[in-house]
Amino acid sequence: MTSRSIFASFLISVIILQ
Image (tube, rainbow, N blue to C red):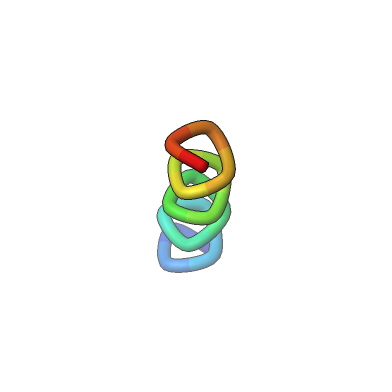
């Protein structure tokens, strides 16, 4: 579950940067 949480945060960060 932790990996999924980190993956979600990474995707959100990318979207914000874009």
